[in-house]
Amino acid sequence: MNKRWQKLIRSLHNKKFRKKENLFLVEGAKNILELIKSDLEIEGLFYTEEFQEEQHTVLEQLSCEQEVASDDVLKKVGTFQSNNSGIAVVKTPENAPLNLDNQVVIALDDVRDPGNLGTIIRIADWYGVKQVLCSLNCADWYNPKVINASMGSFTRVKPYYIDLKEYLVGLSDEVMVYGTFMNGINVQQAKVTKPAILIFGNESNGISTEVADLVHVKLTIPRRGMAESLNVSIAAAVVCDNVFRSLT
Amino acid sequence: MNKRWQKLIRSLHNKKFRKKENLFLVEGAKNILELIKSDLEIEGLFYTEEFQEEQHTVLEQLSCEQEVASDDVLKKVGTFQSNNSGIAVVKTPENAPLNLDNQVVIALDDVRDPGNLGTIIRIADWYGVKQVLCSLNCADWYNPKVINASMGSFTRVKPYYIDLKEYLVGLSDEVMVYGTFMNGINVQQAKVTKPAILIFGNESNGISTEVADLVHVKLTIPRRGMAESLNVSIAAAVVCDNVFRSLT
Image 1 (tube, helix red, strand yellow):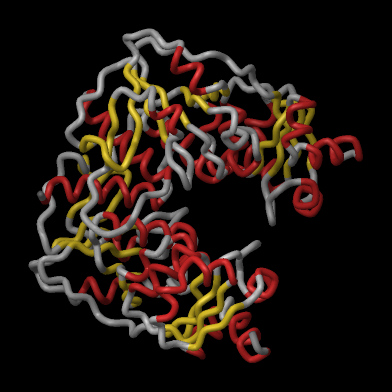
Image 2 (spheres, one colour):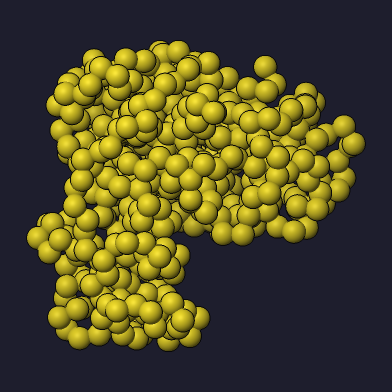
């Protein structure tokens, strides 16, 4: 791997350079294999000999720049503590507006932790949610920790970063807006109708007041024990499980 | 904070010393306040002046050794990147056998990630599950990352570390054993009966073959999208939500 690539990859750990270059990193076997199957555009792909041997039929069909690199170099330039598979440099897709037609969409209000965002992308993909609205103060979708936690689901679920309050104010009346709160109706009994937006809030503060005012139906996950709250990604999974059950 | 405490606290980052001293660490305001309300025995408690001012009525009632410490010292000896509340040194409770009588218990087969274990403790607490069986190769319940991710729920949920296969082999016939697999029955339609054990498996490999052979009912979370799997803590939450719905 030449110095130019090394420097570029290292710079992409950082949001500022991801924005500037319009590129992001994909690391690890599972994520890279999902990436290759997707329509995302790969600029450069670097992998170990071991990965090349295992995946040579897949790799031969790829037209992007590609090269073997040692575990050591991958470790040095990437974000993993060890990397025996590879690193890809990928073009960031457009921030494309949502298609709400007959859809259920997840919206995140100030979800800051990259692990939570990545896990929510994976949950969205499990339940067939294709789009996630992110408020402008959410973690960056293209943060390597997000991509990694998504376990390949970043290839199938698309983000749309926008001022969430403004977006909700401008919505057509037929879109139902749901949010998770401590004092809503039991999500197990809620009847959700499409098109729908399911909002989840910040790790410490939940959904912000200005966004809460725009929620039509407050949902609550029934509690039987004593824990004060659930992690936001856990709440997202339980709500999705209930919502998609009530839709089918 | 004297040198002896500093040395002790630092040694408790490490499982070997936690075992040897029979002590573990609790850090952060939320966890410490839950700890104080619990029946766990505190050996020493160190907190910032700010925490002392906020919590003086609570702290005055405590009979353990306690002392003000600076943020800097707390940061130096603890595991947090910053700590403006405190650190407690706590006696590890006994590894007490389960009471299965009319209970639903969670069992973990080789769950390695401390964040997942802590999140599962919080989920157990939310759904009123009081005990978690851990196979001997699970992450250590008293790892600071586990305690932290549990958000205080470690005070209400108790672990029991044991050879999981042997334990299941020795169970009475009336205990139903459930596990989450890719090819089981839809958890939304499953009728769970008490006493029950709900098993969740390793992050990469799921439930091990030897434990899988002892499961009576295989459960599956219905998938509508394309993600290959769900994170184990996410799966635990969705299964608990469904199981406790079917029980009530």
